[in-house]
Image (tube, rainbow, N blue to C red; front, side):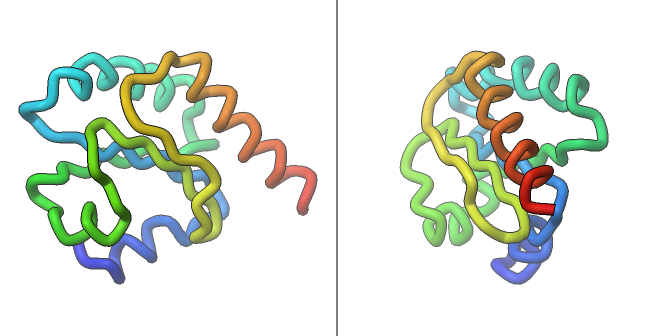
Length: 107
C-alpha cells in the first residue's frame, strides 16, 4: 500500500481502525477475533482495515510500527489513538466511542 492510498484510506469522517499485524504473530492471532467482533458491533460507524506489515514494510516504517499488533484509529486523516499489543474489546471500544463522541460534538 502506498502512502497516498493510505492517506486516502484514513481521510474519512468515519473513524478508521487499522490493525497492523503479521501472519506469524501469535498475539495478532489472539486479537483477530476481537477486531472481528468490533467490526460487527459498530457496523457502518467504523471502518476496519487489517494491514500485513510484511507486505507493507515501507508503510509500517513510516508509521513507526515496531511491534505487532499495533492498532491505530484515524478520523479525517488524523491519528486519534494508538496502542500496541493485545487489547480487550472493552478497551478498544472505549477509544472508538471517544472518537465517535468527539465527532458528534464537533459537528
